[in-house]
Amino acid sequence: MSRIDAAQRLIFLCALIALATPWQPAAAEPLREPVKVSGTVPDEATRAEILARLRDIYGPKGVIDAIEVGGVVPPPNWKKHVTAMITDDLKGIRQGQLHIDGTQVQLSGQVGNEAQRQGIASRVATALNPTYVVDNELVVVEQAQEVIDATLADRIIEFQSGSAQLTDSGIAVLDEMAQAIARFYGAEIQVVGHTDDSGSRMANIALSLSRANAVRDYLMSKGIDGGRIMALGAGPDKPITTNDTAEGRARNRRIEFRMLN
Image 1 (tube, rainbow, N blue to C red):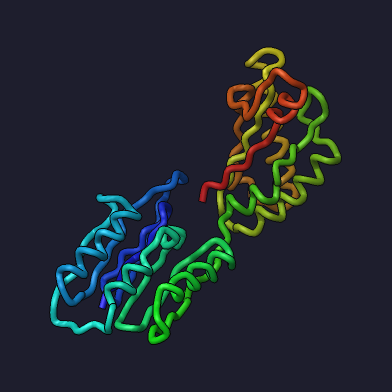
Image 2 (cartoon, one colour):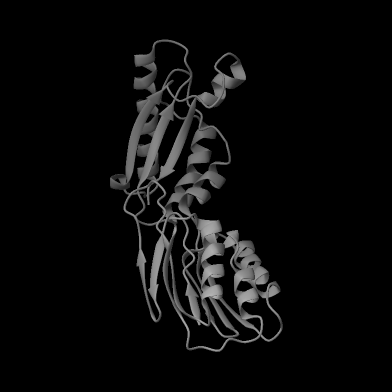
C-alpha cells in the first residue's frame, strides 16, 4: 500500500513502485537527498500522518510526496502500525527501502554492522502485531572510513625524531593499515601528515609532507596502488589538542587517513 525509501545522507534511492534506481554522490563530503514516499493509502488522514512522521525525521524539505489516496482497504489499525515503524533509525539505512503492502513488510538496503541490521528489523517487528510479516533483507556493508579509523585506533605512526624515517613500531601499524586499505579495492585515500608547532611553520609543513610521502611509499611497497593515494602535508595547522604539553605535542604529530570513496 505504501513504499517509503529510507535514505542516509550519503546515498538516495529513488523508488517508483517496482523500480529502484540508486544514486551515489561523487564527492567525499556527505550529501543528503530527499526521501521519496509513494504508493496508495486509504484516506487523507493516513497520508498526512505518514508525511508528518517522515518530515519529523528528515526535515520539512527532506520528503518528496508521491502518495495517492483512495481505492484500497487497509487491515485494522494499519495507519497506527505504519507510522510506528517510521523512526530515526531508518536514517541508518543506505540504498534502502521500507516496502509495506498490507501486513507484508520488506526492509532492504545497506547498514554498517550486524547489530544495526538486527536492531532495525527487531524494532520494526516490535511496532507491529503478530499478523504482520517482516522480511529483513538488510545487508551489512562495511564503511571504509570506519574500518580504517578502527584499525588505526588512535595510535600514532612513529618516525625518527625530526625525520621521515619510520620506526619499527610505525612500520608495524602501517602493516595493519595496508591490510585494512586493501579490503576496499579501488578506493582513493588521502594520507595527511601533521606536526606540532615546535620550530618554523614552513619547516613543519615540509616535514609533514615528507612523512606523508614516506607512508605512501610504504603502502605502495605492500601492494597498494600508488594512484589511489594522495599525500598531503598540513604541518602544525590542524592540531587535535594543545601544543603546551609534551603529551599534546606527541598527539599532534600524527598521520591521518581519509577514505574518499
